Length: 150
Picture 1: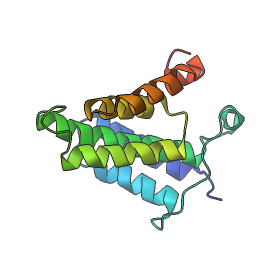
Picture 2: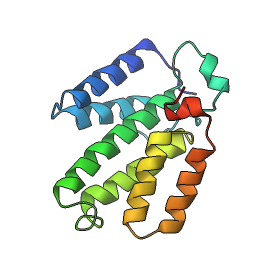
Picture 3: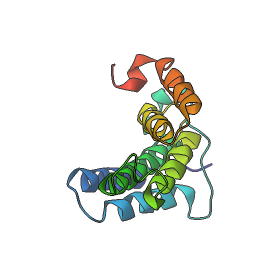
Picture 4: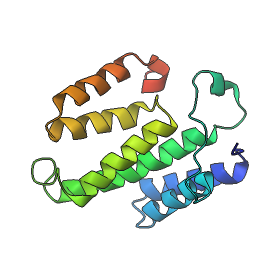
């Protein structure tokens, strides 16, 4: 198992600050966090289980991994938007990368509401209304505290 420690949490906050500041190194910092959690060898922590993991003193590594991957996906979606997203860019490399990152984010933390919503919108814009509706239904069944409505 991958243990959570304060250094991973520090990497997370550093990457988050870079994203909020528009720092061009944000994607690199998020990737460094994902690599630190996954060991750069494809090791992935067990998915976060909510609410069991809510009592932990530090967030479980899978939650930080999910947040890092979701952050990277959002940066890719920004690149797709610059290309004319959604209609002009839905098959672009940034949109495909964003979809892969969102799916990986949900594999690490299946209750990641922001990742589910982003993937639902991406799938809707890609013409897959069935998957989009399925994702929106999953979000609607989450506890309100996981959806930012605590």
